[in-house]
Length: 452
Image (tube, rainbow, N blue to C red; front, side, top):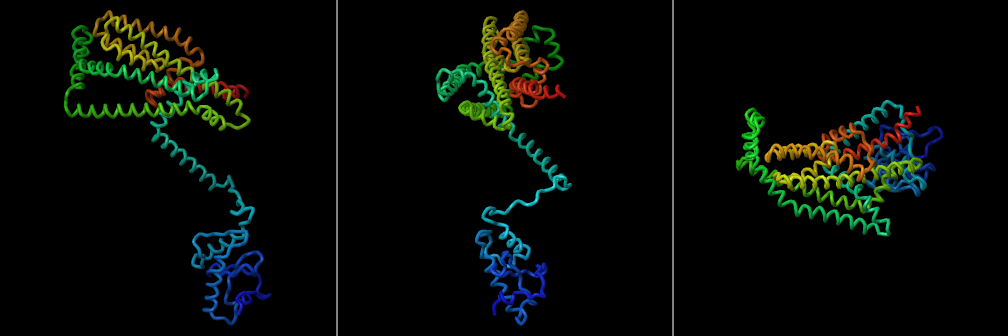
C-alpha cells in the first residue's frame, strides 16, 4: 500500500490544518507543489494499524529531513532531523526551506520593529545605558594606555611641521620621518645619558642634606624658626629621609617601580610616535572619512587648522622650555645655588605647564636659594619675574606666534581641569585641546546660534 496514496484526503476532508498536540510527520514534497510537508493521521489511512503508521512516519521523517530543496535551505546542522525535535521546530524547518531561494538564500528581512512600541523604546533606552556604562568603565580601565596613545599622537602632530618642511624639497616622507625621529631620539638619549648621573647625585645630596637645610634656615631666619617650632619641620624631614630598613626597602621598591613605569611608558610613547609620524597621512584621511561627504571639505579645513595650531604650540613650547632651562642654569651657576642642573631640569619640565608651571618652578628655586642668602633669594625671585615677562612677551609671540589664541581664564581653567583629570600629562595637553575646542565652537556652533 502506498503511503502517499493513503495520505491523499477526500473531498469531504477539507483543507489540512497542523495539529499542535501530535508530533507532525511529513511526506515528501512531490505530493505538494508548495513544498510544505504534512502529517499522516489515522483518519486519513483507514484500515492501517497504529504500528504500521508509526513505521511509515519514521521513514518519511528521515527522508524529509535529509532531502533539501533544489534551490532552498540545505541545513547540515544536527542531521538527521527527526520528530523528536518537536513539532514547532520541524514546521519552522519547512518554512525555512520555502523561504530560502537562489536570490535570497537566507530569506528576506521580516517586518521592522515599531519604533513607537513601548517595548522597543524600553529596550533601546536600556541598551543605551548599558553601552554608556560599559564604555565609561572601559575608558577608566584603559585610561593609562589611552593617555600614552594621546601623548604619542600629540607629539607626532608637534613634529609634523618639521617633517612637512623636510618633505617639500623633494625629500621622501619615510626619509624625513626617519631623520626627525632619529634626531629627536638622539637628543633625548644624549641628554639623559649626560644628565642622569649628576641628577642622581644631586638628588641624593638634596635628600640627604634636607635636614641641614631646614636647620640652617631655622637658625638664620626667625620666621623659619617659628614655623619649625610650631610644625616640627626638622623632625618631619628627618623621619622622611630616615634610614629605617623597612621604609628604605619599600622606598627602593617603589622607586624601582616608578623607574620601570617611566622607562616603559617612554618606550611605548616613542614607538607610537614613530608609527603616527610614518602613517600620519593615513591617520588624517581616516579621521576625515568619518565625516559625511557633504561636510568633508569643511571638516578638512577646520581639522588642518587644528593640526597646525596643536603642532605649532607643542613644538614651540618645547623650544621655550629649553631656553628657560638654559637661562636658569646660568643664573644658578653665577650665584652658586646648590644643585643647579637638577633645578634647571625641574624648571624645564614645569615650564611646559602653561600659566602656573613657571610660577611653581620659581618658588621651588627660590626656596633652595634661601640656603645661600636672603639677597640671592630676592634676586632669584626678581629673575623669575623678569624671565616670565620675557617668555610671555618675547619668546611666545616670536616662536609660537598667534597660532593658539586662548583667553587667560580659559588657560587657567583648562590647566586645572587637565591636571585634576589626567595628572601632569593632562596639564600639558590642556592648552592645545582647549584651543581646538574653541576653534570648533567658533566655526560651527556659534555661527548657527547667531542665525537663530
